Length: 220
Image (cartoon, rainbow, N blue to C red; front, side, top):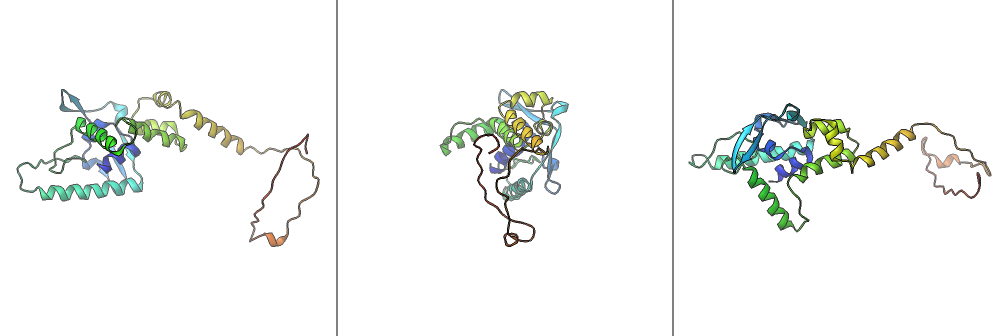
């Protein structure tokens, strides 16, 4: 299940979207997965449906994510070959299945995640929380809110902003500091003793200096 949990954390799809994702809509060469359908559950029965227009999207993958999915695809193919000729084998092009090819049930995925969390001894986390975990580091990593909105399939930027209000202030503060840092400023000061740097301190055009400064009164 590692590759599935990895995809939830680093790509942020909904549970039903991963259940409907077929291998033909995953490119391990170009590093993307295309989300164009989802599975919904009603009284434990599964039904496929097309998501809303804003939820149809292409999520780009990192090199590490591509390697994780590639290893999983190899493992899944090996397991299916071991079930060749067995009546219980199910032909499916889904990206995540049981070892006989049967698609994973959404409720089974949630229960499995919950059980693994209990066995790990970690604090309780819902499967859906992985979707939030996916967005939070991206926002703190200065990814534009619009990009995160499109990756999660939110209908508007406002929904993303409202959902992650606890993260956005930190982003805005960082942005404010970054903007200020590119504006040249002069700070008034008095020179008490001019610093002379020996040419021997340089290596090429670089010199490393360690200095300590403290303000007492006025410009001192």
